[in-house]
Image (cartoon, rainbow, N blue to C red; front, side, top):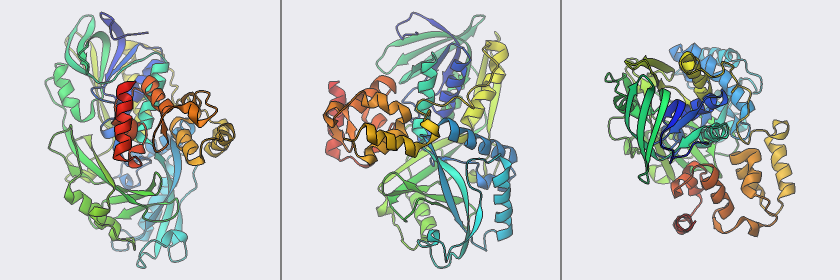
Length: 501
């Protein structure tokens, strides 16, 4: 066990950045028997990795840019993530209304045929044509939407996917240091020497044979700390989302084509809400506090109003969020056309110690990216060459027969004093580890103080002890989305509770 008060601890691999790529790399490396440390300046998934469209998908629109390798890999990963994280990744049916002036039907049909067959689809139904005048999915749409298509992808709780990977890495021996900033790094014939400081002011000193820079939008800042003076050509692109009250009935989602050839998703979200996004605009301001602009909000509202009979306005937005993606600058004229594929840049300090920078990527391909990172570093740091993460379930993913519905049914029998919506939330967040959250409770009172919505003191204790949660935002917006349901008074109660425990 590694501790923060150790004088100077040695690792095989230091990962800088606690987003989905960093957490996935740490998990893969720890499972290969390597000594791993992950350092994150804030909370796990605090930035881009908790600000996605919450999808595990192949990227249908990437076919238009001929990114066939990326789509194939993404579709194959979609199948794997369904198997290893059935509590976090769920099938979702998409409806694509056809607009003849944007793309011909034959082109969309051909693209969907390729999408069905490119990645070895096994668990999801294939695509089909729709007569929206006769289908239930056409009811919320304007009468001009007569024809369309249906196809399959998946939704995901993005921030919980990050935490699950970090939790598994820690269970396999990795040290996860959140709220810790790297302040200095140097290299000699013994490898990397890294100094840091925790948010509380405690110094951190460690050595590592290799460093992975998975800092996302802060990639070049970290490169400077590592003494790599040549910045990588990255492009910062902001993606923003809005959430409104339920826009339509049913569990289907919609993919909406716009005249500028971008697409916007409208997705059932949480209880009684609809998630709408994303935008793709260049980002040039600060990274610490990224927020949607009025123009982006208006764009998303206009996209929805182009298709749905129920109109929305900016004042209908109940929540919004934005994230900045750090993408390889491939010279594309529009931000929406910049490749979402990843690139791994392996370099060596003058003394020979390796540092690998991660550029780009999307949440769907994080596991495959991690495999590639470990393959590139293996000659320098060793560890098992066996690839293992494609079949090893993430914490909580060992559902009986892989069925979330059956698991929730069994949970209702075991904990009858909890309502089914509460049990479903816990099951979708923790999977089989919800038993550790409930910790032998036989009555609601056994879970301690109720803190608002269905949050209890027992769950907060679990999040603090096992999932690195520290603040109200960690709990209400990343470990859960209970911030959407809690009153200001309940948020204040949680804040007091955290200060007292």
